Length: 232
Image 1 (tube, one colour):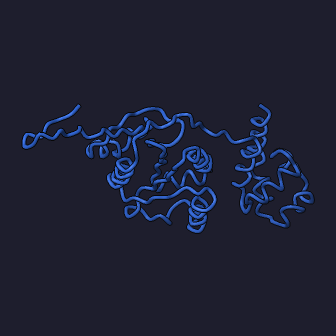
Image 2 (image 1 turned 90 degrees about the vertical axis):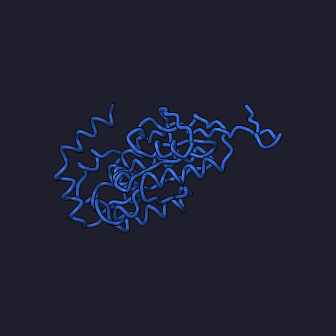
Image 3 (image 1 turned 45 degrees about the horizontal axis):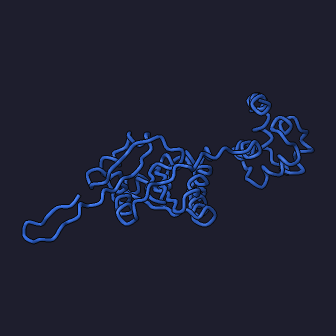
C-alpha cells in the first residue's frame, strides 16, 4: 500500500511492519507489551528454542534469579547449545540495578566463571538490562536494525546423553567438578557402582576427602533410586 503526501506529488511507502516471534511463556512478563508500544508486532508461539526470534537472531531472556537457578540445575548449558543453532544467539540478563548480581544462591566466583564461559567457550554474547522495559528497548533496536526475514523454527531441544546426565548429578556432590566426575564415570560407569565402591577404590580418584565419602553414605538411598531411572 502507498500513501500520498498532500503537500507534494510524491508517494510515501507504508512503514514496514516488524514482527517478532515470542515464546508463549513470555506472556507472564511485560516485555511483549513494551515491544508493542514501540510499534513491534508480537506473535506468541510455543518455541522449542529461545524466548524471542526474529531474522537470524535468537534471544534467551533470564532474570537474575532465573539465571542463577539455571546455572545450579545446569539447564542453562543445554539452552546455550540450543541457541547456537541460530547464526546470532544472544543471552539477555535482566534485573541489573534492581538486584545484586553476586548475592544469593550461587558463589560469586562461580558466577563470574560461568559468565566467562558463556563468552569464551559458548561464544554467546551477553546483554545486561535494568528491567523489562529496558529489555524491550534492546530487542526493539535489534529488530529494527535487522532485515525482518521469517525466522527458522527448525531448531530443536537438545537432550543430554546418559553420560552427560550422570555427570551433571555427580557435579552436584561437594568438591566434584567436571574432570573428577568424568574419571568416576570412566571407572565405575554408574552412580550405584560409585556408591557401592570401597573407600580404597574411591580414594584412587577422590583422595582422602571425607566430605565426599560422608555425602555418599548419607544419600545412598536416593542414589539407589537414580539407578532405577538409569535402567529405564
